[in-house]
Every structure is written in C-alpha cells, then in structure tokens.
Image (cartoon, rainbow, N blue to C red; front, side):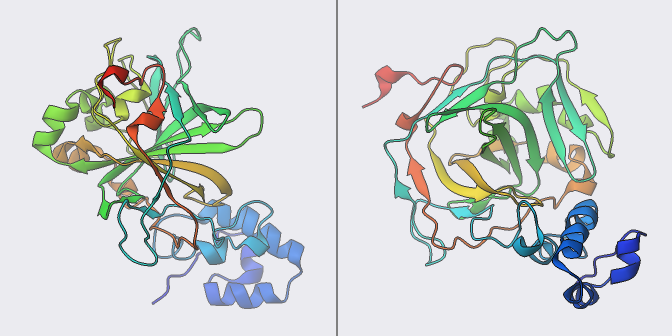
Length: 325
C-alpha cells in the first residue's frame, strides 16, 4: 500500500489534507502559485527516506511543474547504474572517453568535522584557527570546482558494474563563478581482510566508532588528512605520501540525489571500490541513517562515459607516469 505524506500543522496542511491522493485532488483546484508554495514550503520540510515521504514519492512531491528550481521527475536524475559492459537496454555499456581529464588537488587539511542533520551525515574541514588549508578542488572540462563537503550514504546510491556497495562517499563541489556542481562518488564494500590491507587507516582517522547519532550533533576529528584518503588504495594522512593503484571512472550528467533533485550536476563515479570494516559499519554508522539512499533512476538514453586512469591526475593525487604505456 502506498505510504501517506503526513503534513505538519499549517494553513496549507489543513487545507490540503494529509494523503497523497487527497493532496493531488485538492491541489488540482488551486492555482499554480499555491501548488508552488505547497511544494516549496511544506514538502521540503517533510521529505525523508521512509515509505511515507521517501524516494518513491519524490516525483509527486517535487514534480517539475510545481517547482521553481529542481524537480524529481526529470529525465536527468541521479543516481544511475554505471557499467563497462552491456547488461540490458536500460543499462548499456559506457562509451570510452580518452579526452576529458579529471585533475584533483586535495591538500592535507585540518579541523575536520562530522556534522549530523535530520537526513545527512557529512564531513567538512573547519580549521579553528582559520589558517588551515581548504579541502581542495577539482578541475573538469575547463572549470575549477571547490570541495564543499563530503556526504555519506548507506547503502551506496550508484551501482557500479552490477555491484551495489554498502557505503558511498560523495564529494560535493561547486564552481564559484557559475554555481555549477560537480560530485564525485566513491563506493565502499564491507570486508574485514580487504579493509585491513587496503585502507587500514581510514576508519580510525574518521572515527567511525563515534559518528554523530542525532540531528545537530557534531564530532571534531583530531587528525589532519586529505580528502584523497577516501579514494580506493590511497593513504594520505598526516602528510604521508599517497600510494594509489590505477583508478578509472565513469561520468555522466545527472542531478542532486535528494530533493529538490536539481539537474545539471556533473557526476564522476570511481570504478574501483573502497573497503570498510563490517563492524565499523554495523556499530558506528547511525542506525537512523541506514537507508538514506535513493534507488537508481531511469537513464532516458543519456550517454555514460568511461575514462581510464590516464585521464586522472593532479596534485595530491598523482600517478607515476613512468609506469604508464
């Protein structure tokens, strides 16, 4: 049975009722501006990931015709499934892209802070002294995007080569001049031996055992490290030299993965997976946030591209060019 969107007490709520069916019937008799106010003001406060307010209802709650900006029923929505090989008509093989280069610059930063709100858990760098370095930036297709925050979803939102991870870090960037967004998705699988050998320092430095549980909680981390440490195979903590295996990535045009689902976002999805310890995920990740992930969306014939490791470089994320063909 379809869930019900329960409205908070307000003039709009009392006028329109609480059911999705009742909402649509009532809205049909209102003018466009009233619909816009209802969607913008009310649904943006009540959306979540449950049956009564979750992704299955977002296209109704945030349809393009009701939104000033965004809309969760567009044809360029995220996340999607990405893969190198053909799976089905809806999941075609990615096209090769050997032209566009992704350049990353993530210096060692201080003052890292976990922040918890009603629907998200995210990581930001806020040096107390104000003298610390920024979190870094990314250059893509002639634009420079500054890293704003790193959000975490469980399970992962992007399916990569037919595998859906237990965790996904999303590095959210913005171009200050144009306001355009670039997000980088890194998926993680839970596996104790691989986590110990591949990324043994990340969980301890990110303090996964003590992540903020309730909205409004914050946790300041003691260590200085680079956002590059989140990428598979890398350790870039406390000034250490990073060590990476070759990484490749997919890229496509999409949207924010949460309301208002604004489109026009460039997405980079790292093909290789990171590793998290199962116990850290089970014990440390806030139980109230498990399931804060949108299912993959219809592709609508959008092109998806795949780029090799030769298309990825940058300060703090540089490969040994002598080892390449």
